Image (cartoon, rainbow, N blue to C red):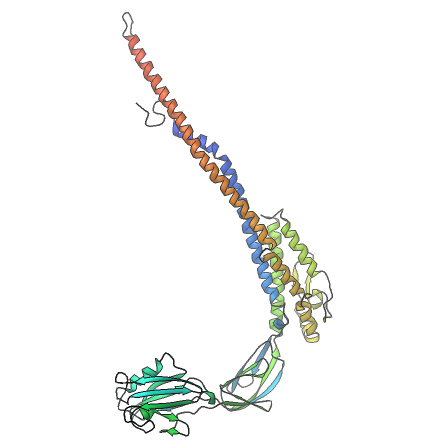
Length: 455
C-alpha cells in the first residue's frame, strides 16, 4: 500500500524538513528581493528629486520672461462709477475717465393678455439681433402667451433673444429682450401672421411685431444703446459696458454715469514674492540634494552634476545684454557658507525703484538671463530624454530583470520541491516496507520450536 501522508512510514516530520530545505533553496530569491527593494527606493528618490526640481522650475518660470515682471494693479477712485482690470500690457500712470452713456439692450413688452393661457395668434415670428436671426413657428400647439415664451427660449437656433412673462394689474405681458447690449444687437421682430392676414397691425400674432421707427405698437422698456466713455478727453464707444483696447492693458467696467480716475501702478510686492519664491525653491532643492546624498543616491553622480550646473549658472557672473547687473547679490539675493539663499528685500526694492529694466534683463534676457538659463537647465534634467529620465529608465530595467530572475527561480523551485518530496516519499515507502519486513521476520522467528519468549 502506498504511503498517503509524508512521514507516516518513517516517523520523520517530512513537511517540516522539506520546508526548511526549500527555505535554503529560496535564499537567492531573498537576495534578489533585497536588491529590488534598494533599486525601488532609488527610483522613489529620483521621483522626490524630480518634484523639487519641478518646483524650482515653476518658481523660475515666474521670472524667466519680461512679461512676468509686468505685474500691475489698477485702482478705480470711484468703484460706484466703474471698476478696472489690468494686464501685463499696461503702463503705470493715472487716467481720467468719464462715463457719459451706459450700454443698454433692447427690451419690449406686448400688450396685456388676460392670462398666460390666452391665445395670441398663429404664424411665423422672425426675431433678429443685429445681423443674426431665427424663425419660430407658432401654431395651435404653442399660440398662447406661455407657449410663445417657451417656443422662443427653446429654439435650437436662438441667436440671442430671451422671452419672459410679467403679469401686472392689467394682465400678462410677453417681454422680449436681446441678450447683448449695444446698437449692433438691436432687436427686431417681423411676423408672417396667418391669424388675420396683416403682419403689422396690433391684433393677432402681428401685435408682437417691432422695429424702431417702422412698427412700434408700444414704447420699448429699454432701447439698445452703445456705451460712451471719455478717457483722457478721448471718446470711446462700445457695444457693452466693458471697454477694452482703448488703453493698452486696461479694461474698464462702466457701472454708472460720472467721472473719476484710474491709477495704474506696478505691483512691486508681487515681484518681490516671485523673487522670494525663487530663493525658497532653490533652498528646497539644495536640501533635497543633501538628503539624497546621505540616503538612497549616496554614490550617484547625478547629484554632483546638478550641483555643478546650478553653481555654474549662479556664480558665473556673465554679463547680460542691457543689464548693469551680473550677479544675484547685486539685486539682493545672496548665499551663505552652507549654500542657503536669502533675499534682502530692502535692496531689491531699491533696485526696483532705480534700475527696474536691468533687474528684468538679469533674470529673463533670452539665452543670458539667470532664470532663463536655470529654467533650461531644469528642463534638461526633467524633460523627455533628460538625465533623470535616463537614470529612472535604467533602474526600472534593473527591476524588470530582477523580476524575471525571480520568476525563473520560482519555476525551478517548483521542480526542486517536487523532486525532494518524491525522494522522501520513496524513503518513507522503503522504511515502511523494511519495518513491515522486520516485524514479519520477528514474528516468524518467535514461532520457531525451541524459541523461548522472554516475559
